[in-house]
Image 1 (spheres, helix red, strand yellow):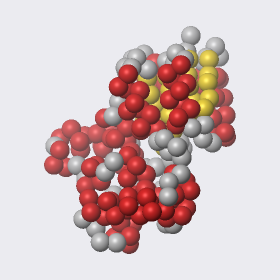
Image 2: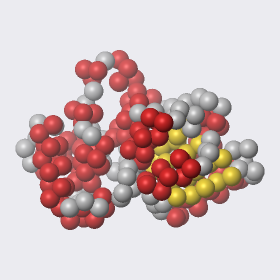
Image 3: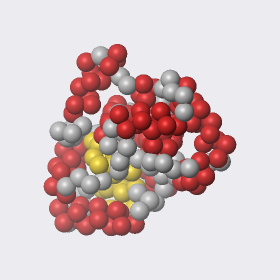
Image 4: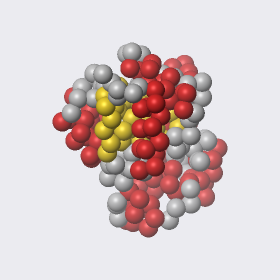
Length: 210
């Protein structure tokens, strides 16, 4: 029997995923959580075959959840979901232990293909994700500067590139405006940039904006 945990903070997304999965696997057992911490707790207290995990949560990112679980268990398959382009998170998720990475606007049939692939113990690499993995495998020299950013710095970079203010970012990530400013300063240093305008331009050039 297939056991799937859906972790996403949007009820509509969870409901859509539930319906697609139940149509294909009528006897599936599905659990739902709406935060990163809740996902971590349910993963640790219940047995799941597959965890469909959103990247972005206000409390703990999906990438952080993935890292913590992978330190403890290798038997759970992870399918990571994101609204962001593959260039921003695909390599980070897959090289961090995920078994598949899909955008939330992925067609239903591809979602089912991914679930079937990882259910059988394999990986699912879509045609849109594969080019980014090839860059990583060919040479570390080809890695972009933002590959050295932490998961939280990547989140802040993505939100800044969307034009969010420090106050808005702080509200989304549940951190202070001062902390957001500190992250921005670190990002500028690591990317060798001078200001927010250059940061946004970098994100656009790297295909990191929605």
